[in-house]
Length: 206
Image 1 (cartoon, one colour):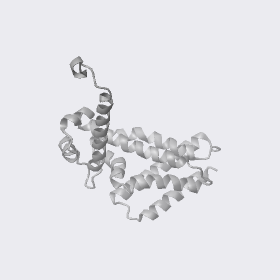
Image 2: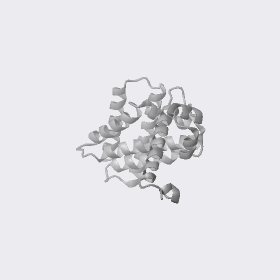
Image 3: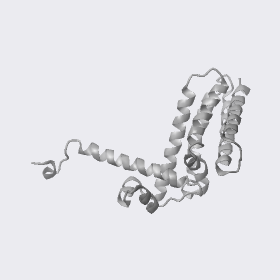
């Protein structure tokens, strides 16, 4: 008697189904970055997503409850990629605050500037899409903590915390203005300025 006749599942069928669902979700998230991070602003609706991916609405709703849930999932995914890139960068052995600053800035620039659609999702979409208006604040403590952990441990805890907020705020403003066209400088000059700012912030606490 077959698995279908008994109501069971063929060996490996559940894994295969889970893999297909995961692959569809990944495809939907990747297209979401393109649409949410479009140069002219977010252009995200279910039909546009399905048209771009070739995935039917049935499978869209299997992965995401509604359009706003989808937008938030895209934002969360990009935020996690940014956090993971920074964690990996600051985990590398370095000999000076300048080297650590360079590693962190290179990692973030590689993800947010060299992939401007991701940068626009992370930094501009919260201002452009109502579904994200409050969500971005929830991710900020993760970035504060990463920067704070890279600052000299000899400094007072309160000073390190304030400096981390100061540096993340400044970097966010710089990258946001660069991506929106409000800051017309070269990529290299932006990187150099950010590295010097981070290194100076760290050295100030030494």
